[in-house]
Length: 158
Ligand SMILES: [Zn+2]
Image (tube, rainbow, N blue to C red; front, side):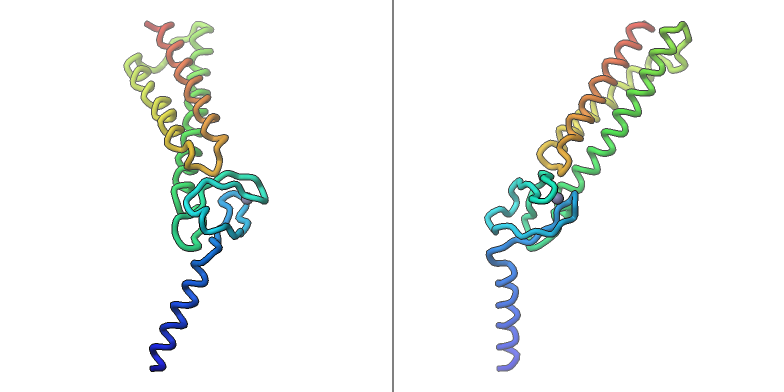
């Protein structure tokens, strides 16, 4: 009997926690917040720092546990790769313009076209999933400029 009552109490507590309010943490400013339960899994905006992110689907978990964290990581890597490649290619282009020989074979440069394309695809993946939407266009701009620089480099070589 006692065991039964105890079990009922536990279930009662769980139902109360899962009830009207959904507790989550902003992935950017780490501020804890409570949301109406119907916001579950929907895009929301942090009332403290205005960051856009997706409310968790499950019970009272941090928003970073979902796709937001993974998408953020993908976009950060894509942004670094995009700007790194752009800078490197711009340096090669400048070197070539001043009459230097490009130390990378043409075939490798053609192969390198795949990387900015992968960055663009990563930005599409991150769109709508990330808590840092500005990284979507930042990485995309870097990738397009990098593609442009690579093509410029290739057309001057071939
Ligand atoms: Zn916030």
